[in-house]
Length: 115
Image 1 (tube, rainbow, N blue to C red):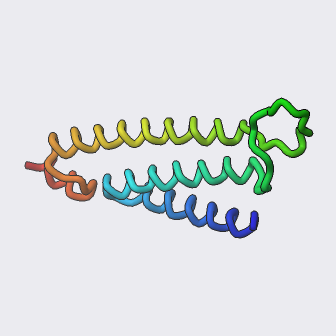
Image 2: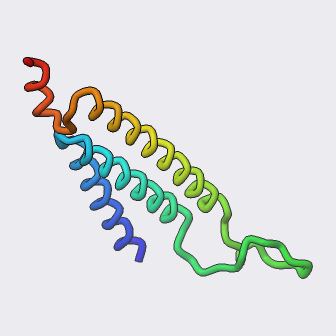
Protein backbone atom coordinates (compact mmCIF):
# COMPACT_ATOMS: atom_id res chain seq x y z
CA UNK A 1 0.00 0.00 0.00
CA UNK A 2 2.87 2.38 0.74
CA UNK A 3 4.22 1.92 -2.78
CA UNK A 4 0.89 2.91 -4.36
CA UNK A 5 0.66 6.04 -2.20
CA UNK A 6 4.32 6.90 -2.91
CA UNK A 7 3.71 6.67 -6.66
CA UNK A 8 0.58 8.81 -6.29
CA UNK A 9 2.58 11.40 -4.31
CA UNK A 10 5.20 11.46 -7.08
CA UNK A 11 2.49 12.03 -9.67
CA UNK A 12 1.02 14.85 -7.58
CA UNK A 13 4.42 16.52 -7.24
CA UNK A 14 5.02 16.20 -10.99
CA UNK A 15 1.62 17.71 -11.77
CA UNK A 16 2.15 20.52 -9.27
CA UNK A 17 5.57 21.44 -10.64
CA UNK A 18 4.25 21.26 -14.22
CA UNK A 19 1.42 23.63 -13.38
CA UNK A 20 3.74 26.04 -11.58
CA UNK A 21 6.05 26.42 -14.59
CA UNK A 22 3.15 27.19 -16.96
CA UNK A 23 2.60 30.76 -18.13
CA UNK A 24 -0.75 31.37 -16.40
CA UNK A 25 -1.32 32.58 -12.88
CA UNK A 26 -4.41 30.40 -12.50
CA UNK A 27 -2.31 27.32 -13.22
CA UNK A 28 0.28 28.56 -10.74
CA UNK A 29 -2.34 28.71 -8.00
CA UNK A 30 -3.59 25.21 -8.86
CA UNK A 31 0.01 23.98 -8.76
CA UNK A 32 0.50 25.45 -5.29
CA UNK A 33 -2.68 23.71 -4.10
CA UNK A 34 -1.56 20.37 -5.52
CA UNK A 35 1.92 20.69 -4.00
CA UNK A 36 0.36 21.42 -0.61
CA UNK A 37 -1.78 18.30 -0.82
CA UNK A 38 1.17 16.19 -1.95
CA UNK A 39 3.18 17.45 1.02
CA UNK A 40 0.36 16.49 3.38
CA UNK A 41 0.28 13.00 1.89
CA UNK A 42 4.04 12.55 2.21
CA UNK A 43 3.89 13.52 5.89
CA UNK A 44 1.01 11.09 6.34
CA UNK A 45 3.03 8.33 4.66
CA UNK A 46 6.08 9.10 6.80
CA UNK A 47 3.97 8.42 9.90
CA UNK A 48 3.32 4.86 8.78
CA UNK A 49 0.19 3.09 7.64
CA UNK A 50 -0.72 0.89 10.56
CA UNK A 51 -3.97 0.27 12.35
CA UNK A 52 -3.34 1.05 15.96
CA UNK A 53 -5.14 2.25 19.02
CA UNK A 54 -6.07 5.79 19.82
CA UNK A 55 -3.48 8.21 21.17
CA UNK A 56 -5.16 8.65 24.55
CA UNK A 57 -3.98 6.94 27.69
CA UNK A 58 -6.75 5.24 29.63
CA UNK A 59 -6.73 4.33 33.30
CA UNK A 60 -5.60 0.82 32.51
CA UNK A 61 -1.96 0.44 31.54
CA UNK A 62 -1.55 0.18 27.78
CA UNK A 63 1.54 -0.66 25.83
CA UNK A 64 2.98 2.21 23.81
CA UNK A 65 3.25 -0.07 20.79
CA UNK A 66 -0.54 -0.07 20.48
CA UNK A 67 -0.78 3.72 20.51
CA UNK A 68 -0.74 5.75 17.32
CA UNK A 69 1.90 8.44 16.90
CA UNK A 70 0.32 11.92 17.17
CA UNK A 71 3.31 13.76 15.65
CA UNK A 72 2.48 13.13 11.95
CA UNK A 73 -1.10 14.18 12.62
CA UNK A 74 0.07 17.44 14.19
CA UNK A 75 2.49 18.06 11.31
CA UNK A 76 -0.28 17.49 8.76
CA UNK A 77 -2.52 19.99 10.56
CA UNK A 78 0.33 22.49 10.54
CA UNK A 79 0.96 21.86 6.85
CA UNK A 80 -2.74 22.37 6.07
CA UNK A 81 -2.73 25.72 7.85
CA UNK A 82 0.46 26.80 6.07
CA UNK A 83 -0.85 25.75 2.65
CA UNK A 84 -4.11 27.62 3.25
CA UNK A 85 -2.14 30.73 4.20
CA UNK A 86 0.03 30.47 1.11
CA UNK A 87 -3.06 29.90 -1.04
CA UNK A 88 -4.74 33.02 0.38
CA UNK A 89 -1.58 35.04 -0.23
CA UNK A 90 -1.25 33.83 -3.82
CA UNK A 91 -4.94 34.51 -4.50
CA UNK A 92 -4.54 38.06 -3.18
CA UNK A 93 -1.48 38.55 -5.38
CA UNK A 94 -3.33 37.23 -8.41
CA UNK A 95 -6.28 39.52 -7.76
CA UNK A 96 -4.02 42.58 -7.48
CA UNK A 97 -2.02 41.51 -10.55
CA UNK A 98 -5.20 41.09 -12.61
CA UNK A 99 -6.56 44.41 -11.35
CA UNK A 100 -3.38 46.26 -12.39
CA UNK A 101 -2.62 44.52 -15.70
CA UNK A 102 -6.05 43.30 -16.85
CA UNK A 103 -4.73 39.83 -17.73
CA UNK A 104 -3.76 36.62 -16.00
CA UNK A 105 -1.63 35.27 -18.86
CA UNK A 106 2.05 36.19 -18.66
CA UNK A 107 2.44 36.05 -22.45
CA UNK A 108 -0.17 38.79 -22.85
CA UNK A 109 1.72 40.90 -20.33
CA UNK A 110 4.26 41.83 -23.01
CA UNK A 111 1.46 43.32 -25.09
CA UNK A 112 0.26 45.48 -22.21
CA UNK A 113 3.73 46.98 -21.69
CA UNK A 114 3.92 48.24 -25.28
CA UNK A 115 0.68 50.24 -25.10
